[in-house]
Image (tube, rainbow, N blue to C red; front, side):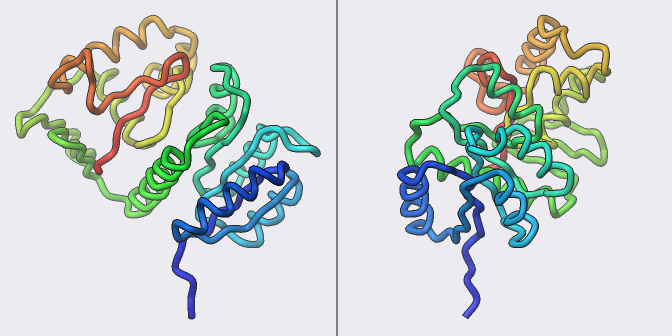
Length: 231
């Protein structure tokens, strides 16, 4: 009989944390393969082709950032970093290296499971190649470059539209300030975060019913932004 649950590669050198993840994930229908080192994680990822990777940064043989970069040379599975490093700079480095999300230890089972569901859902949506994005009252037709809010067309500036489509491309995941600026405004704009706040404020006023309490365009303080995908 074929096992139906998604396969998760857990890369963690601390035995108590591995036990916690093993119990939490297998009891929720996921299959697991475990690695204690970066080198073994790369080998397991190549051999087992997991659906998702949970990766600790503090590995005994090499830094998790290096493992992330090497995985991103070929692997398409979502990578969620689980780390005790909670500084904004650590999150930014991990996301820039290719991680899809970042969870700081200690974390609750509910939060982790929600992040996993979002990552797997985004992977499934990305694989369909669809040109429609919908979240609540927001609908974006990427093929026609049309943005609708409550069935009314909204006109965006080129930069606003590029910011929105960049977030949609990474729906559910944090996109760093630097990455957003680089993709929307060009490679020489990656340090102009003050302009990004202005652009995002304008975008929220056009798309959100209550811009001060956004439902779609969410802030990850000090790190970047994410768009909430369709439930």
